Structures are given as structure tokens and as C-alpha cells.
Image (cartoon, rainbow, N blue to C red; front, side, top):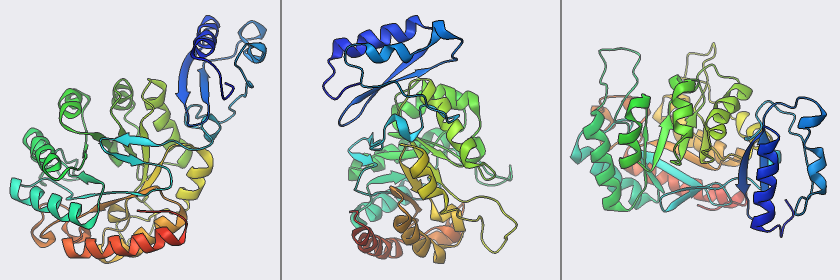
Length: 335
């Protein structure tokens, strides 16, 4: 739409689009509004090109990529996703930090205090844990979600936690500010569709063997159901290399920024599996253009019930934040 298109003109376009058997998604940017029209073009009677003459329309532009709503063309300036009092996207970086798993009230509150003091913007913690072995710690489940919520509210940080089952959506929407879809569920399309019917922000992790186009098509499932609040997370992919837990694919960051308007964050904790590599890869991610970082932090990693070797101690995380600030400023960003 034109920069000064009226609300009546926008709604009239929506009516005309739906009359042609397309679904219309209104995407409101800083400077202008886009009406994304999703559907199958079936001959001249379903063509949208004639809408270019309608009041308020600047141009009609086909999106040739398979991912329509996630494509950069839809919002060239990039999306900014509000999560509680935090924002992901734009010039300012967002840092999401906290333990891999919520283990106790004392542990999650100590982690919340530490990451808040160091300058994190959101608190993360797993309550439902998808583990390779059924005998590994599976998380505190409902109680863990509530402990995370209380800890976040106490220090003033929005909370992020992973959802595994569509049946848990009501619980998660009530107690969490952002829902994370883990690598193992990145192509669980029934879960993605259900998340798309909420307005809750979603942190979508890349699957361990998911190509970038497949990753964006997974995001498209959420967007197509009406939820525009999606943040992508590069967390490493499975390759032949076994020296690290995964291979952190930093090529993905600038390429995704070319292809999509969705914010991109990087998880160097899962990307490497080694706490000593988290800081250098976090700095590299910022230099590559990431909009934020997802860092695992634990008061006592040596006693952690899951993924201890990749979690940072509180003092190490504080040092990481100082280094991130310096790199961010060097590349024209801020923390």
C-alpha cells in the first residue's frame, strides 16, 4: 500500500483479495502496510494485477520464493518482535540467557539474578526437555514453567521456554512470554499450525538436518495461520565433524537476513556443546549480523542435570556480555 493509505483503503483491498479466493494477511511496517495475498493463482479471473489501480495501492508484486509471508520482500526493513518488555530485531541486540533446564526454585532464581545483572534481556529455561534417552532428566514440566515465570517476574525479564506438545499450549501461553520450538520439532507441522493460531511470540530453532529453505517453510506454517511473531534460531547442524556437538552454521545468518524479514538469533551453546567455545562463536555471530544470542547459563554447571559442559558460569557470562557489547558497537549495533 502507499505510505499514506487510509485504513478504509486497506480494508477494501482485503475484501477484494478475499473475494478472489486468497487469504489476506495485513503486515504493518514502520513506513507502510503490506497486504500479503496467499493462495493459488488460477487464471485471469483470479489475477491480482488489476488491484494496482485501486485507491491506496502502490504496486502488486509477486513473491516468487516458496516461502511467501517470510520473504524479505514482504517487509524490506525487517521485523521487530516484541516479547514482554524486550524486542528482538532492529539495531539493538537481544540476549536470551538462562539454564538449559529448570531444576529447582533456588537454581532458576540464582540464574535469573545473574543474567539480569549482566545485562540479558530475556530469561530462558527448559521445563519440558526433549532428550535423546528416555532415561535422562525430562524436566520439571508444569512446575518448572511456573518456577520460571516467577523468577522472570521477580527480576523483570520476559521468559522463554520450549513447547513439545500441542496439548500444552494453553499452559505455556498463560505462563511464558515466548514459546520455543526445538530442533526436533522444527518440522512438527501440527504443532507449528497450533502455534500460528496464537499471538504468542515463537522462537523457532533450525532442525539438525534442516536446509534453510525448509527452515523458512517451517516458519511459514506459523505465519500462514496468522501469527507474525516468529524469530529464527540457528543452533548448529549435524555434519561429519564430531569434535563439537554440532557445526554452527554462521553462513546461515547473513543468508537468512537476505531471504527473510524475520529476526535471526544464534545459539552457540548448542552449536558447539563446549562452554569454552561459546564466547568466540557468540562474537562471530554478532559480527555476522545476528539480531541476538541464546546462551545457556547455570550457577553451577558441574552439577547441572542436563548439558552441563556447554553452560556458562555466571561470571563467564558477565565477561561474554562485555565482549559482545564491544563487537556490537564495532559493527554498528548496540546491546
